[in-house]
Length: 406
Image 1 (cartoon, rainbow, N blue to C red):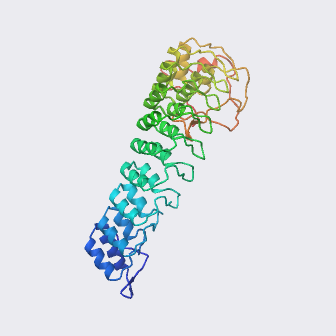
Image 2: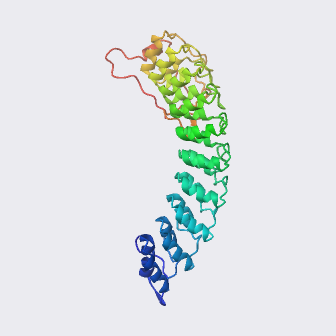
Image 3: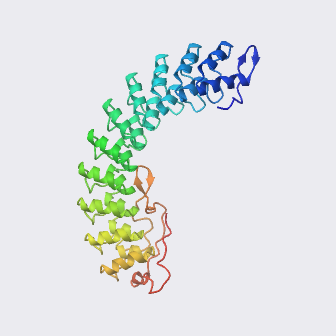
């Protein structure tokens, strides 16, 4: 620990940065005798720069030093510059003995940092199950919320701390508590981030598998968007509906195809997902995969019997969409599946009228880029129906076009 740079303390009637630095250094290293000598010499136990001596001792689990500082009048709930108390610091690092010293000295078990997080939330984030047990035994409120409405359980699930999730559930945490901002549950958060262990613990505790966030996105859709096959298997085995839809009528299969996750697509198809369901813009999984050039996904869908000439709300087929975005590989696959080469859209230049899948759920963009939303644009349709076939480069050609989206 470096000597403090900006704070001063009273030491034998003088101002001394060095004296404060000595106390912090001794507390950090666990030198109880030196700490006692400095305290007896009149150094204030709460003098600090970024960290005070008590927090430094708690950070390193030096219980003897903490006892000496507290006996000398150190403030048990003082905060360092990042607004954490000694109890929070000890909880983050799993120093259960240090936590007990602080709690016995009257530390507020549910004190909040400047970010409104508690020691229990901190311990949950870092998977410190032992520290969590100490806090719960001391009466910590298990379902307190942070500014976003997240509980310790939601935080633990978000970071994949399966052991912490189990401790909190056994302590009575509300398994389906939702956040205030996006209406996400612990199961949705764990699924989106691919934390299979946490998902399994939550499912065993009876988490509602069909809960949806504010966009109508359920846990399976989140996992499909990110290609988390292990999570998807766990959810499907627990009874998740393979064809559940979000607020845009997009299914988990459409989301997996939009992101280009071939393995996730295969998992859903094996679970009986309907291959040709449409979203509110009339787009099928095959159309999404074709537009974005996910050739592996296109192959899987065609093998699964996807209808190659279905049309969206603008009258476009998968072939027309692939041709529009210059996806030569997808065009070639669709032609090989006998897609109608002379199909024409029913409406031209209908800017912004086709639904575009914005996000993969849980507030994050689709892994494969996703379809663009919003800004209306004129669609440059081919002037003649043969242009779809022309999108396939001739033998020896250098490339297959590009897609100018996200």
